Image (cartoon, rainbow over all chains, first blue to last red; front, side, top):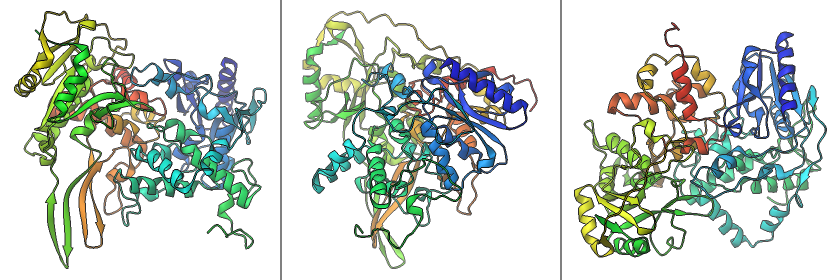
Length: 300
Length: 339
């Protein structure tokens, strides 16, 4: 990790020196090591505390949204999942490829800083794991879009069948499924962390922030909570790049990736072969953003 | 002194629960929080020995969604039906000093300075607080730096964990005395020694920060410190003292009700204006507001900070924002430089 960290710093310094970038998105070291945090350097001098370690789990591509309206040329470090986030933004026309210089890191899998801090918080009875949950089922550890690649290519980390959990839910009866999700969504405190950390949530005005009319009520009740998650799920179909940030950061541990995995499975089944954000081709669009007359509609 | 032996705790809770809803720190599947001591919940593990629980008792006094009154529309007229002020008896058992201080913050906001929030008052007037003194602060704790005495929670009764021999039961107020009389059968007279308080593991220096912040509204530090923040509301909803709310209406045809729900200064919609403007257009302004409110504005109005040093926001933040780092960085800014 130290070698990767040094390499990132030296590449970034070179890019600033050569006048190729105006800002650089990566991580800033902090104490303790799991407190490493996303960081936007605006000059070579800002690179001093830039770092990369096993806790650099956040999806760095999310931070491009803070810069989407500017003109700055941006250097950015991405892991495999983060790079798919860049494809999402390019397809959604939220950023121009010419503005980016992408440094890809072949990712060995990260540890979850939230689990690290919770494990020693005295408030929650959890133990830190060697590999973050979201990294235990990672299909794409290596960046899919980059200008420069760091590290040896990594094999996917699959700890079982990819859709095993989804299939378990599919095998339940309607009532069982409803009860399962009703119980999970009852926990939701509507903090919108899952939306804010989501790279596919790149709308400028979110439907939940619309007041006239107000599409989704603000009560923490079964119906409003379900409406929130249902609407979010439909917006994710064919667009979620499965970085797992929503589920990782949910403060009440709602299994959000169960829904996103189901959507990925269905998008592939009905409109595939399709996997969101695996490569970028100019003009390419997500599966559900294109209409074809032979699209299946028997499920409607 | 009065002592509550540990094997009598559940019997005492059962007794109080006959007259009031009792909220007790307990574990849940993924975390911990204050749960009602009733048949549905009391099988959960009791967490009186834990440092604290993940979800603070704030919601007992200030629920996330609270129905206010029913209403009916008749032509051009609107008639108001039943109001839902809830003055039922409640006891919160095992409150740590940081969370008790947070309740004092809510009291000041909702009950003082010329306006009384009747919904909050109905709940507050009927709540008795039983504190649980802290003697061993955790790694993310810094209540002392925020002016909170961990061994002296601002509650009606204070429990002091004297080990196997039981809890010292210290009565602090009139309502505390009343509750004590009702549960006298579970208390014995014994002399016990309270434990020695351990040192804080995290050092924070808040002295002078509120004053210094007055000149830092336009400081570039906010842009820099807000960089990792994704403007979710997790910190505001887990915070024991954050109290912003919105009032909204739910209608079915001509009938409905008005309710209030927690709101968060992290959201763009929070400051959205009817005309389309927004005085806090980006995450930087929203981030700045949260920390100025915690560390400066509240202090100016009430004389103490709105942060109680419980450390929960640090634990829950998805991107590693730490209020202790922010206080430190504010201290380090050279304020002699003209902006």
